[in-house]
Structures are given as structure tokens and as C-alpha cells.
Image (tube, helix red, strand yellow):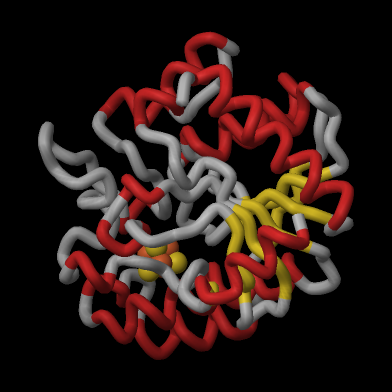
Length: 238
Ligand code: SF4
């Protein structure tokens, strides 16, 4: 499949999702893949809302990019925040950087700062779209283009599931898409500042996320409950 067909397929999928599953949303962390999808959504004026989760610990470069996207594309970006009381209780009991101390504390931090706000962001939506790719990591090697997210009770689409890194960066270069400057400093995957580091050449793309944990535990819970057995049903529906 050539790159032109790749892009045409993604456009066709985004159009079908926006038409058949309104209101559809793109969950963006403003990584390179999310920027490809944002560019397509904005250029084609698709009725898909872009939202992000502000954990309160994002790198300054990500905050700057959120504003740059608003200006460049003239689109509103929905920003969802953690529940203040839950966050205050967690920090009071465990300190501000407790995520380094254990997997359990790290997961609780992700639950408060990411998973709970995600559930609020998805409530009442018809479908959600992500920029996940199979080649990104061990934990994403089996993601499908179309899934059913049983936890949130709605279809979930990963239009770039089959793309490789070259596909992403080729699209970005040819469409002059703004990207997070951290990518050029060795950060292929960008999350919260204290939990993301640059990677060395040859390392797994997500090796810089929660690098102190085992590779199979390195997800934040945002994508854990998609049910792949429902793929055919969802595909047929799209
Ligand atoms: Fe907390 Fe780190 Fe998870 Fe961000 S990535 S929510 S700082 S544990």
C-alpha cells in the first residue's frame, strides 16, 4: 500500500466515524500521530472534537503546542482536568512525586490525572479516535483499526494502527504539521514531564515512558479495556 492510499483510507475512516457515530472525538496528547489526525480533521473540517487531558504535569512544550494548534487551525481544543479533591487527597497522603515509589502509586496517579478525566471526556460521545499504532510498543502490537471500548461503552477507532514511523513523519513533512519540539530531542512518545525521558537509538519507541517499570506495565490505563473480539461487528457498522 502506498502512502497516498494510506492517507485516503484514514480520511475515509474519519469521515465514516464522524457521520455514523456522532458526536465523535479525538483524544489527543499532541504527539506526532495525534497531530496527523488533527491536521486531517481540521483541513477537512470534519465534525470531530479534539480534546486533551491536562494532568497538571505536562511539559511546557506540550502546553505551547496546544495553543499553537488553536491558532494554526482555528479549532477549539477541549481540555479536561483532574478532580481537585481526589488529587489533593492523593498528594497529601503520598507526596507530589509518589509515582516513582511503586507501580501501584504510579497507577493511582494516572487514574486520578488521566483515567477519570478520560471517562468524563468520553461521557455522551458516539465514538472516540486515537493515534495509537501497532509498531509503537509491546503493549500496542495487537491493536485494531476498529474496536469496541467496553469500559466506556462506545466504539473506538485507531486509524493509524497500520502506519509505521516513516508514514507519520512523511505526512508531517509534506503538510507542514506543527509538532512537539521534544520529538527532535529524542522523545518519540511524550506524556507527563516527570514520567517521560528521551530514548537512545535502537530503543523501543515507548521505552522513555515509565522507564523504571517492566515494559508490559507501561500503559496509563487509558487504553486497557478495548475488546478486540468485537472488531468485526464494529467494522461492519462503519
Ligand atoms: Fe502521574 Fe506520571 Fe501518570 Fe502523569 S504519567 S499521571 S505524572 S504517574
